[in-house]
Length: 203
Length: 161
Image (cartoon, rainbow over all chains, first blue to last red; front, top):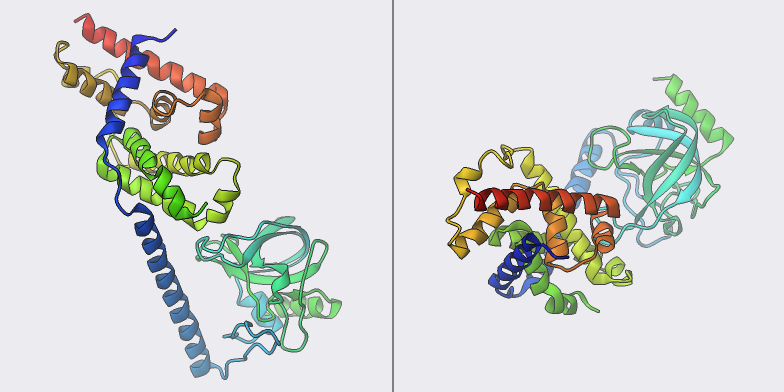
């Protein structure tokens, strides 16, 4: 049975709904807003890349460019070394991929082209302590995880990787943890893991 | 369906829902635009959904609840019963009665208010409301029951004065 208060609410809401006129150019304003935001994001990313690159050129030597054969491969602003991977990134670990999540949408707050990847951690070098961790990575088929002297074109569930990276927006090491490419994330080898361990000890 | 087609068909309905949820025209515009921006960023996911409109309404409702939570952390909370005298209308005045009911609604929790709007404006059943708000059907029923009881008691108090 409908109560008077329910009638009153229906009347009130219906009346209020009628008061608001149809919006003008709503879709256009949303699309315009998004285009402007993307331009701002791209401008910011561009400025950061240029700044990091410039600092590196001024302070430490030439930029090491990605030497892969993919035309879209990125310019690496810093050179990989085991010590840089385990001491200069916010987190680093040896892990085995257990799950590859759904790729972020194209405009998902700067995560475009990435996907959340969950690892069982075999060994932490820096920035964490749990048995499992999820980090954002380039999608497996991107081939973006190689090094200048040996590309690692893909990974999948079961792949064992050495991963290092940073929080996407700063803060805790694993806050929106994002793996760094340019050799800082690479396929596991006994030799490389020994180098990473050695680099931690030499801190 | 393109984003533009969707907005042409449903934009006004979304704005009306936003207005009934917020009671503020400017806030409703902001809410609608924010919800549509979030939908636009994930448009492929929206069109893949079984019910794209429900998907966008879910974004709108949850954005509103999120905003309400943030506002509530900076605003003084209203005691539901202690200030009724401040807002009580002349019972003979229909417009004031409506304003009084609206004022009482603002004193409900955001979740309770949202449940009532979805039930009595959007005509959704409790299962659909639960799905939209990401809560259980029992929680929907409990929130609606408590909110209706408060509104009923306040109106009874007014009529018996």
